[in-house]
Each structure stands twice: as C-alpha cells, then as structure tokens.
Image 1 (tube, rainbow, N blue to C red):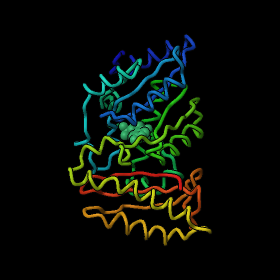
Image 2 (image 1 turned 90 degrees about the horizontal axis):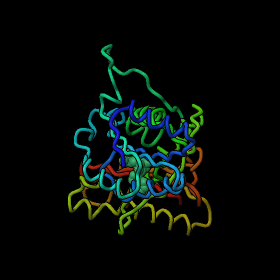
Image 3 (image 1 turned 30 degrees about the horizontal axis):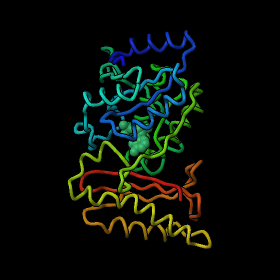
Length: 288
Ligand code: AMP
C-alpha cells in the first residue's frame, strides 16, 4: 500500500491510472477506522475488481465542524488506520494535511465552497449549520484529486449520501455513487468513530438509538393505516429521551428519495434521529 500525503502526488497517480484505463474505487473517511469503514473498502474492491485500484482517504475536515463541535478532540489514530487499510487491500491511502487541502497561497483564506441547497436543509443541516457545505466542498475536492470512477459512502450517514448523490448529479461528476449498509455492534449500536467518546455508562445506554428505530418499525408494521408523524415522534422522543443522560436533538420522518418530511408515517418511510449521550452526539437511521 502506498501512502500519499500531497495533492500533487495523488493527482499524478490518478492521472496515470486514468491513462491506463484502470478503474478506481474511492472511500473517503475521517479515519479512526472501524468495521463500517472496512465494509466500504471491501465494497470498493468488489466494484473495481482485482485489476482496479482502491483508494481510501483519511482526513479530518475542519470545514464540516461547527465552532463548538468536536474537531479538536476528534479521535485520530493514523498508525492503526494504516495497518487496517493495508490489511484490507487498499492500494493507496491518501492522507493530506490542512495545508494541502486548504492552502491560503499567501493571499488570504480559502473562499470557494460547494453548497447543496435542498436535501441538505433539514435534520443534520438544521442542527449543524455549514456542516454539509464542508462535506460537499471537501468531497468535491477529493473527487477532483482522486478522479475515482466509483465512490462508496455509508448509509449510517443517510442524509450525507443524498447530498453527495445530488452534488454528483447536479455538477456532472462522472462518478457512480454506491451506498453500503450500516455496520452495527452486536447490541445494535451503529459503529462510529465517535463511540470512543462514550463513558461506560453512556455506552450501555447507546443501543437505545437502534431500539428506537426498532420500536418505530414495530409500531408502523402493526398499524393498519398510516400514522400521524407528530404522535409517533412524541412516542419515540419519550422512549429515547426517557433514558438517563440522553437529550434528543431530532426525530424526523421523511421520504427516502426526496428527503421531504412527511406528516403520515407508513412502511417505507425513513426515520432519522440524533441524540446527545452526555456530550457525545450520535445519529442513526432506518427504513420503517
Ligand atoms: P467518517 O469517517 O465517519 O466520516 O465516515 C466515512 C464513511 O464511512 C462515510 O461514508 C460513512 O457514512 C461511513 N460509515 C461510518 N460509519 C459507518 C457504519 N457503521 N457502517 C457503514 N458505513 C459507515
């Protein structure tokens, strides 16, 4: 596995592959890798085949964190990420630093952003202003640097996959986006680098996120007619927010394709939730 730290070296490699007609699969991450990330790397390998190349990136993108969020304490473990990606059969690990990704060129600061204006508006977009602007900007930059044919994202960040798909369509990136399923711990907690922040007690309560999705599924599947979103939301907030030390940020029901909020919940409606366990903010989602 080759480790590349500069934009120019990554670009040279990408151009050589393109000239040779080699297919490239790309998995962008913020590192501190877990089995969720590794499942996307596996999916990338399957998509490009043995003759293709798999690129993973590790970059904690400051532009997608708000001023009071966890950017400075976001977990970093590059040595471990290197051995995990090497073992997973990654061809190139791209690890740029901030000066590579956001150079100031001596003439002030970085000032061009990519903004998706529709599916990015609610949920994470409403709770974390500028988050998706940071995501789309860095993903567009990474796409331009890595020149992948295929990019793989995780369903764990459902709204992010919708935002990236929309950006790819609207800005004509010649890239196929594949979305891999959410990988969970045995007790149902969605794997996340942020799970490391949880205290022992918080970790014990964290499966309540997935239990909330399961509760919603059960209620929807038992119902003979569409349900009021308001009523079901109150019930789920009561359940999740009733756990000690848990503060619900949002519970949202929406159409899985348009991400439009719905007033009536039925089978096939998508549910997304965000909640604080102490200081740690967790998200999860699932189809009902
Ligand atoms: P992150 O490092 O958290 O920015 O995530 C990098 C990629 O891995 C994103 O496409 C995430 O959606 C995906 N991902 C994170 N956690 C999981 C998980 N538990 N299962 C599947 N994919 C995940």
